[in-house]
Structures are given as C-alpha cells and as structure tokens.
Figure 1 (tube, one colour):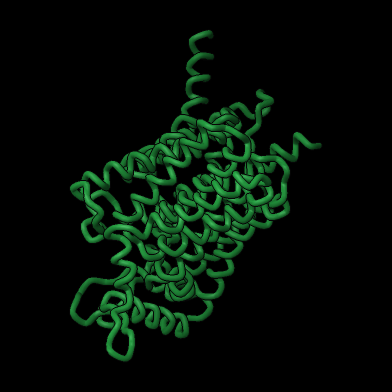
Figure 2: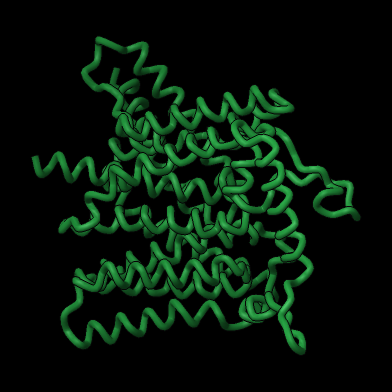
Length: 413
C-alpha cells in the first residue's frame, strides 16, 4: 500500500512538472513543447478516468474552470462543428476543429488540476518563461553566427513561431520585472531584467514586424498599469529607463532594417513590398469568400484557390493571413460569434479584478489582458488562432489568471 500511495503521489506531481516543462520549452523548442503537451493530455485523461472510477469513494473531486468559460468553450465547439459539417469538406473541417484547435483549448482543463496539486507553480511560471527566453536568444544568435541579422527567412529553429511568443512574453516579463521592483526583490528584478533584454535581442533576430509594434505597446501598457507602485523619483527614473529599453532595444540590428524596409519609398509615393501586396490580396479574397458564405462560411477544412492568391504557384493557401477575415470566410458570422464567446468569457471574469490590491492577482489579470491584446493585434495581419506554441502561452496565462482570481476570492471570503 505504501508503494501504491507513493506511485500515486508521483503521478499527481507529473502534471505540474509537465506544465512547467511546456512553459520552458515552448519558448525555444517546438518538438519538446508538443511532446510535453501530449504527455500532459495523457496525464489529464488518466486523471479523469481515475476520478470517474473512484466517484463516490473519494472526497477529492476534480476542480474545473469557471462555468462561464466552459460555456464559452461549448459555444465555440458547437458553432464551429456546425460550420464544419455544413462546409465543402466536412471531414477535413472536423479534423481541423479536433486536432488543431481543441488540442490547445483543453489546456485550461489540464492546468487547473496541475495548479491544485502545486499552487506554487503559478509563481514559478514567469521564471520558466524567462529562462526559456535566455535559452532562445543563445540559440538564435548561434544560428546567426553571433551577428545582429534577420533570420526570419531561414527559420531553421522555428524562429517564425518565436515572433508571436515574444509578443506575448515581452510584456509579461515587463510586468514581472515591475512587480519584483515594486516589492523590493532584487534577485527577481535582476532576473527579469535579463530575461527582458534577452527577449529584445531575440526579436532582432526574429525581426517580426507585428511584434516590433505590439511588444513595445503592450510593455508600455504594463508600465502604465504599474505606475501606482512607484512613488519615489529614483524608482520613476528606473521605470523610465526600462521603458526606453523595451522600446529601443528591439529596433537595433537586422530586425530594425526589416521593419524600416516594409514601405519602399519612391520619388513621390510609398508602395508595399511584394510580400505585403500578396498578403493584401489574400485578405481581399478571404473577404470575398465570406460575402459568398456569410452565415456558416465555406468550412474550416477548406483552403483557398492558389490562382486567386498567386497565379505563379499551385500550392493551396490554408488561411487568409488575417485571423478575423479567415474566421469569417471559413465559419461565417456564426463561427465568429463562437470565437468571441470563447475569448470574451474569461476576460469578463478577470476584468472586475483589474484593480486588485493583491500583487499576484494584479499581475496575472494584466498578463492575461496582455496576451489577449497581442492575440488581437497579431491576428490583424496573420492567422494565429490555432498556432500551437502561441496558444500554449495564451491559455496557460489565461488559466493561471482564472485560478489566481478564484483563490484570491476564496481567501477573501
């Protein structure tokens, strides 16, 4: 019996370990992160099966995320399933829904039992992301021959994925840094300052234009919401210096040149680069598809005809390179309603806590706001819904914020 109890205890701790491994490796290693997530799903399935078998014999009942979020998840699943079945390729649409979307959407259901078994995991997550950023900058600089150059066209290391992740983690590192600085934790302040600098350097190698705009803007938002924590002139000077670093550091090196070359100036006008012109064409075509199928779209499993996007290629385009247009084109207004329900449900639960005096609650609520805003900003020029590495961070932060507000509410009651 002692051995069985010990094995059960180790199994219970496997979930928190895998969630921590997912946070760490999701920054720099796509394969490792997907493996950790697969094992986390397996842990959750075994945990759920064990709870069903022991129902009524054990007082330890599973803890689920708030009913409002579960209702949003159900609304999303139902509306997208209807759109998939009504689309041109129902089987492919259902496959997209299950394999590409619901996989990462299950993360809050897996994170909550992990947080229950290791409540201290929440405080460790920012450190794991920060450590992952330090590893990422070493790997990207090694691949670039230790030079400030843009590696985005090579993408040997999944550097394209890193762009979206940096847009999420740079403001989170800024918030963690400000929280540590306001609390007087010098070691944590130094760690997150180093992590923020590493993220800025990694961005010069990734040179994502969306991230160049989103990351500084969201970092400034973090500085603004934390302004109440700094009263002394010396503290304000440090905050201002950190804000300038967050804005200027990503614009040095090869990445800055790519951003500045977005518009090719002519003698009397500015024209879009060829890659951007093709992207605009994809937006127009996606909007035309939506107009043809306004209610249910053409189906999540459908691609776009290559001749409508680029007449020189035979490759089908899987998306319209703009999240909202792509959702409208593939699932129509009904699918957009389910998509909004999925994301607005947790935000409606978190927003009342935006002025919380508890440092941990305040941090996680605004971290969730930051990743959701980045999700919207990135989605204006790309299709990021279902991008696994980005969704891992997105739903981990959202689940942590929901858990933290729940625990703060229980402590206050």
